[in-house]
Length: 160
Image (tube, rainbow, N blue to C red; front, side, top):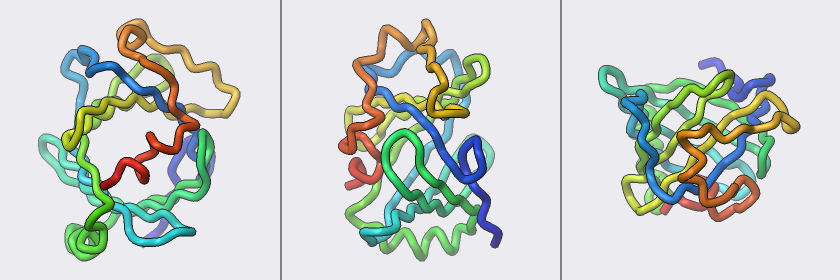
């Protein structure tokens, strides 16, 4: 399988993350349910995901390197069999969420409604570190604060 880089620039993923007070009204935005688990390891953070939508299910392996707003990300599609085999090794480092996709101009907001705890986060992937993020009017009343640089709100930390 070929490894495909994620993010907007080569294999660089640049995103900002926000803690929300509640799930905003999303007007029927498309969504998927994500089961995500992290494989053991301290240096390399590898995760597996099952993303189930209305008509399809995708399986993805991802390696992310670095912390904060800009990180290296490598993704590859995989099979249900590979996912199931690797999933067994993620016991104790899992999360479950519904991800809603909301387009706003040139970016897409991903609103993560966690299904295994009371938590809602918003992420937006941006083309550069100095890109000026504008919180859309529909989202602004729900934003508690930005948590991009707070490790406790990274998915790896949230997995349990």
